[in-house]
Image 1 (cartoon, rainbow, N blue to C red):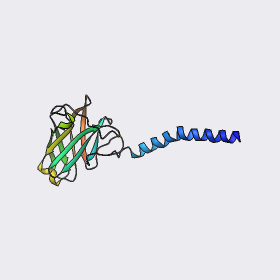
Image 2: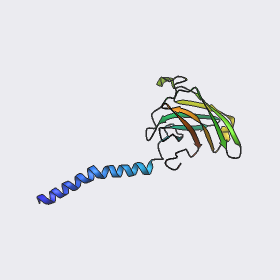
Image 3: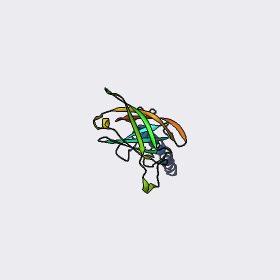
Image 4: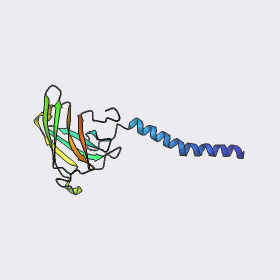
Length: 160
C-alpha cells in the first residue's frame, strides 16, 4: 500500500513539475506567431522580436503603435522620433511614400520625440489591399530595419 502510494505521489510530482512546462512550451511554440494586436491591427516584428509595430488602416489613415516583444504586445514602447519615413511597395502600383508622424498619447506622458503612437495619411491607403513598407527605426536604443507587411504581418522567425 505504501509503495503504490509512493509511486502515485512521485508520478503526480513528475506530471506537475515536468508536464506543465512541456505542455506550456509546446503551446507557446504552436501559437507564437499569433500574438494579440491590442488595437485591432496587424503585428510586425522588429529585429529578433525586440518588439512589434502594430498597424491599423481605416480609410486613408494608417495608425502605428510600437509595442513590446513576444506576448508583451499590450505595453507601449516609446521611441525617439518625430517621424518615420517609409517606402511602400504596392502590387500593381509600384513604390509609394509613407511618412509616419508622431501622435503622442498625452495621458501616457508621451510627447513628440518620445512617442509610441504614429499616424500617416495617404490617399492611396484608401483602396490598398496589401503592401510592404521598409524604413529604419531606433527601437530600444538599437537601429533596426523596419519591415511592415500588410495585411499578413511580418515575423521572419515564425513564418510570416
